[in-house]
Length: 567
Image: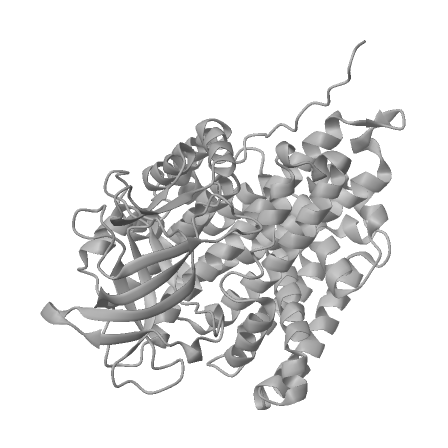
């Protein structure tokens, strides 16, 4: 008796098959800048298709373990990880996923666009990294913090090394069990110790990448006042000088049994007079310094969301091309085409937000525009990623619910993205604060106004005829204008009194509308550039995002009709 065996989903080259990523790099970096990055991107893409996919599988199927004591009772606090995890660690160093923005030759080549190239690397690698993108994010954040506050630190050189034997990653120890995201109640205390070091005492509840060689921890220096602003960042070496023995007073109480990101060793840590190095002046309130790190990790979170959405789409497309249903290929079914087409539009939107945020990071890491865009990009992409991952599982039917296919991991891992680095509600309140800072929402609203004009004057005229059903480009422009006018009024109200109970209650809805409108503006901006060069595909993506997300239009027929162009 013969037995049917469904082909497993294949993965195309993630760089050469991603026309949207390539167009984005051409626009932001210029043809010469993109050409200078192609060798680096192609090399990483080749590794993703080969050894890193195998390493990813190995790390996911062999989660980390903790050994607290050796057979004779000596405390060792040893975290054992898989060979696949170590392969990912070496690849991150070799491909300069952290190091690139700190390399002089890279900055000489791309200038502020170095962060754009870094984002492209993350976009290609992250989904096949077994979430080693998490310690990479924290290492980048720690490097940015040290580069600003202590640029001669030997730890900075190790964080940004491309030699796998030298490079280290960092943890980020902020959360405590009694407060979670509310760090104002942090009880970890720091007091001066010998030789200019400080001694930290307290418990940290959610410490990802606990195998990292160092961590950045928030603590309250002796004599500091209450509240979050008076906390200060400290660099905590994870090990003693031999690199093996745990640092004095440091205990790993347990590893977390998490829903997803199972390859990442995440633990609870107890500090008891553990030596630490202040990052900056411990006598000066340090939360503002710590935000240098947090902004970077929030952007990495957005990159992980966008990259994961694109990779999940690739797997769903491959499955649809090989799966026969009701006498035909699933990819030819109009309803399934509309479903996957909508996911392609959402993936494009997430990519636009993440890529834009990294562009701003390279241009002005402390600028007013990034102050608002960072939480918007993180919260918007995080929610898109979870919704998309759920659809990807559904696209595989029962196979999407079976663990050994690897498909359920897409949803398990996506669910952390709206939680890490601040939940949707926490970030929505942060958006309210950003609205009252510097330029507030003015740059975002200005982008939206330009995008509305571009929809009428620069996008392909045939889209307003038969190519798009309904109102076409006129409807796109009208949707952007209406959303922008409503936002301008609501932003003014929120900025006038961000603590008003009605403003706070509506913060999530306002933040998501800001995120969706910014995404429309970014997609339309890119579409206008592409249309000038004869490429109409970005205009379709931008128009369908805008009509659906801002105009509330039913676009399923368009998603089916233009499916081949959208993917």
